[in-house]
Image 1: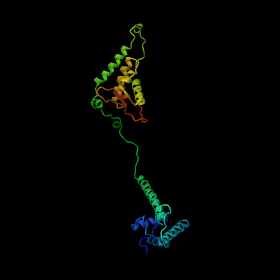
Image 2: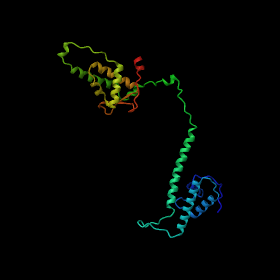
Image 3: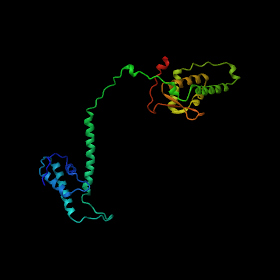
Image 4: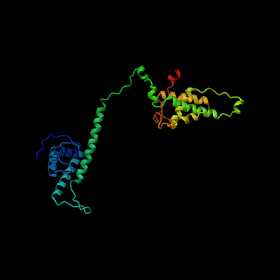
Length: 264
């Protein structure tokens, strides 16, 4: 049987066998060994190569095909344990399937390699005015069904607790003036608290403050952090606690930019 296709270079005997099987649209699990062996040997008669290693691989495969062809003419053997018929082509089929898998993977990677040449990477060229633009905050959307009245209620309750804790006798001894509480420092403290706890109640945050002034500044800090989209406030139940949750992904915290807040 003459081979009707133009001789091509194949990477090895498995590559040639796979080509013959796919060209003739043969079921790889049911290889017509007589026909495939004839075509394989015909190709070898026209093979011209100085690569002795490659030639030896083709010769070994030719020997394997002739051996399978001879065994197919004899009564098929049975497995002693399972009593199943042993197909002389089974090992060759397994090798072909494995080779086909790796060849497809190699072609896929090669395609990605050549496509990569078409991809152009460049530095960002966004104008400064566009990059620095910040979309106006919609307070109605930000707070949702939560409103300042509810926040004020929690704030007032915490402030009242602070008043109740004052010792009426010792309070007349005089006061020790403390340094003013910095809004910038408190915003950073609240953000650090949020990053550490991830989710916590608004009440717990306020109650953790030591003075009424700190409560007030903490309250303002929460509002500012909500405005710049660093934390979110939610209430799961109608009369439940208001929960604060950081919107930053854990491990991807960014440096706080408070320039707009402080300038304002």
